[in-house]
Length: 303
Ligand code: NCD
Image 1 (cartoon, helix red, strand yellow):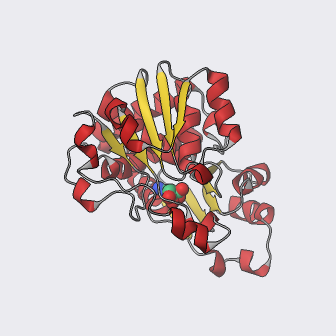
Image 2 (cartoon, rainbow, N blue to C red):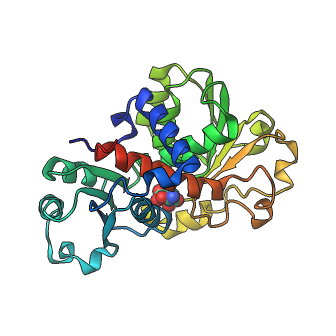
């Protein structure tokens, strides 16, 4: 029985296999329609979500399975003071697999240590978000046809943006990766993530200037400033519109740049960019469903 709490829980071979399975699901959906008949996924979301929870649920339905959904922490026994450990033990009695999102870093790990079924981290605080990275990887594979020799700009809230932390961790495994980390000084990448880059020997630049590096980028990964992780609203208001991508700013970019964003978007990308063929963020949404299907199959050990 295996859980996925951190993208590091999956080897590079396994990441590549998940991408291959997701691509097969896209080509042959009928082959997978009954793979999880009678299996149940429990989605335990203690934080807001649209895409992650619905894509997990859509993924399970498309595999023929069922879903038990707890979308509002206020409606569960957590509101009465139940621990994550007890919730995990309880849900193990009803379901075959859990996807959990929680505002506290490490909560899905605690759940995995106490559950008797696989637990998938669907986002823990400002820490990790491995299944968003799976969505991002499939998008990169489909857009670029490779994972190596890419210059990747990550822009916005690199401090609290958990999707950025997990994506960097995954991409450091491939060769010829150059990271351009673009953020306001206050929202620079945490030192533990920088250490991952350093240890992998990947090239890395930290800057506040998106325009300077725009012409170099193969991928531009925009992120939302994570209001819910700020200690004071004033700082949020000062920083929230630090980077706003517009069609004008994209004039110096490569013709085959891929603009990505985990969504939800607030102001970081003008809606005028949506019609640009380089905009990939709604493709990412769909790819997330296929990768979650592939991951559920893997963790439930369904052939
Ligand atoms: C992201 C998250 O929850 O971290 N959303 C998502 O799952 N696609 C990004 C965000 O909330 O900014």
